[in-house]
Image 1 (cartoon, rainbow, N blue to C red):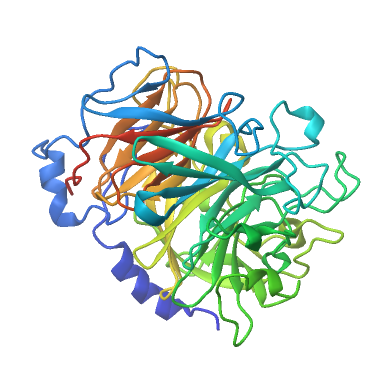
Image 2 (spheres, rainbow, N blue to C red):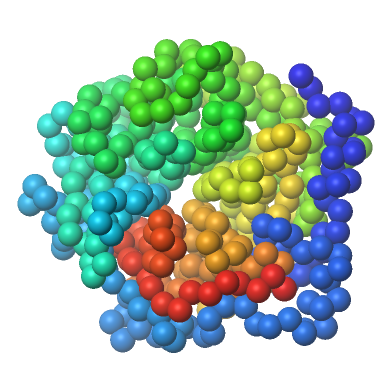
Length: 474
C-alpha cells in the first residue's frame, strides 16, 4: 500500500528533527544516532573530547599504519599463504563476514572480486570439485579459520562465480555472496549466466555443494544484501551506472520461512522484487539520492515491482523510465542494525554521473516500519585526496560494537579505515601504507576484540587488535 503524503509528513517530522551539519568538507557530517539539537552547542564550541585513538604511526613493515597501542597480523596473503589443498590463496579480497566457531575459533567468509575468465588472473579461486558454478569464471569465496594467535586454515566455499564484491551475513548464520557482474553465457568467456546471489555456509561444507543462484533476488550487478530478521525481507544494492543503479526489496512468498538451505529451494519467480520510488516532505518525486544536500533529509519510500527480474532482454535498472524509480550512483555496502539498513551511496570519481550537488559519499538509513530513508552521512568533496587526513569514497561499512560506524575507504589517493562517532565526528583507524588499493571487508570478530579488513590488491586479510573503547557520543 502506498505511503500517503500525510503519513510521511508526520513521520519525517519525527525522524528528521534535530539534525545539524558538523565537520569539515571531506569528513562525515553525521552517523548513526545523529547529532540532536541539544548536542550542537557542545560540538560547536569544541568542548567535546577528541574521538578516536590518536594519530596514525607509519608502519616499519610498510603495510598498515595504526594508532599507538594497536597491532595487526596478516591472516591471508594472495600468492603467499596456502589453502588446505596446497593451492594459493586467491587474490582481490572483498566483502567479508565473521562467524563464531567452537573453542575460540573465528570463521570468516571472504569474497574474491575476480571478473572475467580465469586466464586473466594469476590467483583465481581454485575449482574445487562439487563447489563450482561456472568453470570459466575466476571468482568465488574462501572460508578462513582463525584462532587467537593467527590463521589456521583456509578452504574454498564456492568457485566459478564472477566479481564477488560485497554481500551480507544472514540471521541464520550463512553468507550471501553477490556477483557484481551480469555477463550472460557466451559473454567474456562465461559458460553460464551471472549476476546472482549465492549462499555459502561456513559451518557445513556439504551444504555448499552444487552451487545454485538465488534467482528470486534478481539478476543484476549486485553489491550487498541484508535480511530483515523480523520480516524476512531482503534489501539489495546495485553498483551500476548509465543509468544509475537501484536499491531493491525482495518480499518472500506467503508462508516462506528462512533458514539453512531454504533460499536455494526458491523458484526463480518466488516472492516479489521491487525498486524504490522516493518523495520528499512536499510530496515531490526524487529522481536520485544525490539530490539530498542536508544531513537529516528524510524521503518517503514507495516500492514498485520489477517487471523482469532475470533481465532476459533488458537490464533490470533499464526497465524503468522517468519518474518510475529513485536511483543512486555506486550503491555499495550495507549493514543491518538499529532495526534497519545502513546503505552506502558513494560518488567518488564519478560525481558528474549524479544529478545532485557534488559530494564524495553518503550513508542512508532505511527504516522499514516507517518506510523512510534518512541521510545520516554526507562526505564533502575531498579537495586533495593525495593528502592524508580527509576521507572520501565510503564502501564496505560495519556498525561498531563500540558505537558508531567503521568505514572502508575506496576513494582517490590515500586509503583509510575510519570511524564515525554517533554524533558524526570522524577519526582514522588505519591507513594503507602498502599501496593505493582500497580497503574492503571491514568487520569485527564475534567477541568484538578484533577488527578484520582487507587490502583488496594484491589480496591481504588483516586482523587489528588494540585498546578498543566506547566512542564518545559528542
